[in-house]
Amino acid sequence: MWKQKTQMRTVASVAAVYPASRVVFSVLLLPVATVWSCCATRPPLSLSAASAMATAAAAVTTDSVAALLCASPSPPPPLPPLRPALASAASALALPARLVAAAAAAIAALLAVAHAIAATPAARAVALAALTAAGDVPPHIAMIMDGNRRWARASSLDASAGYPRGSDVLLDTLRSCLALGVATVTVYAFSIENFKRPPAEVDRLMHLATQMLTKMLSHASTIQAYSVRVRVLGDRSLLPPAVRVAAARAEVATRSHTGPTLNIAFAYTSRHEMASAVTTLIAAADAGAIPTNAINSAAVEACLFTGLAYGGGVGADGADGDGLGDVVDLLVRTSGERRLSDFLCWQGGGALLAFRDVLWPDFTAWELVRVVLTYQASARLIRRRGPHAAGECAAATAIDREPITPEVVTLVAELRRRHYATINADAAGVAP
Image 1 (spheres, rainbow, N blue to C red):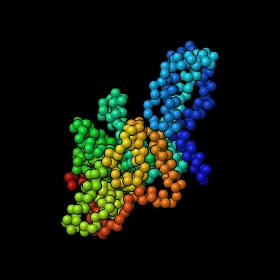
Image 2: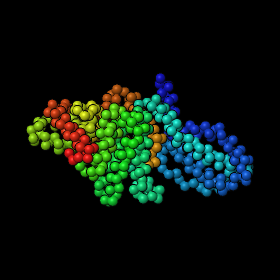
Image 3: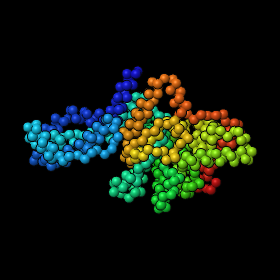
Image 4: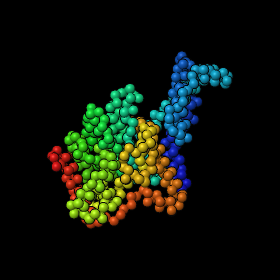
């Protein structure tokens, strides 16, 4: 079994950083492509055309080698002029310049084909299946989707043009996570701090959020096929009516689903979440609903946005869960930033942090495979360190649950009843 898992892990690693199709095409078809390039083209391929194709091949190869060595995928260094390089190679090898140029063109073409194959659903499915067999899959993945505006500017587009592309990437990444068997995906869609941006940009983001939530329900192949339950976490009072209605309808429409969960953090920060929970408990204590000594970490956790959504260990009508789904196992941030930006600080205290230099609109299933491989390697390391280390990891990953008093159970049940009543009212377009 160990040998089989090692083999599957190797397949997943190769698929993630150097697709097997690239190797197959390079080994089997390079001679054929080279002969075709030299003999079948009339007139023969020019040196300038081959240089242009070789430039693309060199860029692709540099990125592949960097990924293979697990190096940071930073832009490759400037390449030297390739026309003199090809001429020098032809002279050193005593080969015709056109033959060397044709070989470079063939390599470029083969690498392009390999990249196209790696982007197909079949290649992605094989890699995800191998990854699932290779080791543990994180039950809860949280993502900070950063870099939409930078991607748009780099693409010579308006800054807001990156967000529609980002929403498409979100749905694609969700499909990959569900194929892996991830139970919960939480994404940071809009921070409370984002309200400080120019009003025109905030309005565009709110309009896009309404469209995204509506569009998400139309993706029957994903939401319905996997029975995904959608939850929106955050302070709904800060949202425009249209967004509140769209969010509530998404939650109501998927409330009966029993599969994985998609949490969308909107109008959210961890500080606001924790402050709201503590304020609620203090107000309840002042009103005599709970004793002061009942306020502990378990009570605070049950009153967080995630606690109200999952139950925080408190059962109530209209909701499910045992409070364990809010513990984050793997937290991913794109765009190269190395900070959490006030996202799930309570729930992610023991999470593995994975910072990727890729911008969110460029995030692919292969990037997801890489971060999950990192998670699996970390899990294996903890197991090798022995039971004591595993116990430390469990203590860091799971929030220490102190006893929760019956008074707090009653309070949280009432809070959740109000929470779901607000959602139902918003879905109906009626003020609660």
